[in-house]
Length: 76
Length: 414
Image (cartoon, rainbow over all chains, first blue to last red; front, side, top):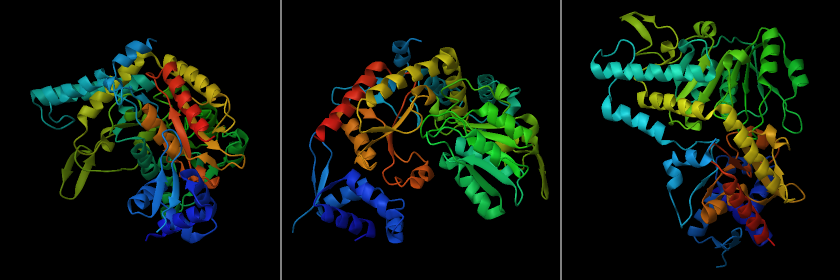
């Protein structure tokens, strides 16, 4: 699994559930603290990565009509 | 200014998806095209799709291409009030215009280039490159807290080492227009030349290169009702003559031998190879179209709309607008974030853009708007911002729909 996806999984796990803003804010916070986060997310679209992870069965996505999509780690 | 009539010129606005018309608020990226521009380009492809330019074919079609392309160059010259058509160089876009200056303006090791802290990557990366390759010093003038230009700081940073000031005219980040005339006057007092990135100013307000006394100006036609793939580099005639060569080959020479070439003068020296004739002709039609509406009318219309949208947005305490509070200082651009009390994003700009698009056909931009450096310096490089950017065909009714969308987004969180 790509480093960026592993970090996203960790962020969502630690929060229970997260929307895109939660994940971006956390990556923004970590980006300049942890060089590996900087490297993993440079040029990476988190939105696209989340879509991939939903398609790969790693995440569940709730899409309310006007609400913000919420992501949870899929239980196995 | 009759907006209803203007809207009829833009076929893309007649489209529908899910029973709704499009609301196009991504004009800082690319504007829609009126029929007049599309028809001018079609005319090239239908009637005289041949080569033009100096020293190429002399036949019927070729002569028509040459006449139409030179007419377009004259139209652009009039549009920015250049002294001569020879001061108008066709490029691909603003990025290429700036790269020509970065590569051809004489800068030696230790010479300094001054930019602001709000430059588009187009006016940042060339200088980073020059710093690492040629030892040119890149200095950055930090903006005031409200993102306006800090004239005192600029004056402090000016010195004999500064050979070129290369600055954004109107920022694509927040719509703020730098006080170019004053900046240029000070730069000239120190013997420096000035390159303005006019990508967001020329399409939206009257830009008179003689009044500004600017040395170089770059802009993109795709942001001003014209085709993509065409840009302009304006330069004072004497300054263009001093530039080194850029891409060379066909059309940049008067004559060649096996061991040497006799080069053309500007503008042709910088227009290598077969040109984008349809694009140039479309550019001429675009500036004629805008001139008929009147640049003063366009900027006034955008300012009125920006004021209406800004007031609606600021009814929500979650909205943080980037740049000065006063919408009249932000052209047609509203760059904003939805934030929590701690300043982190409440709703991702990406989600704002996607939901407005999906539910209301409102097209805005989200991300770093090619000004990554500004966002990274503030620790929000991953989040970025949402940006609505307006143009001549946008209406107050569209602004109302946009505000209703923002309202529903915020309510959906509760």
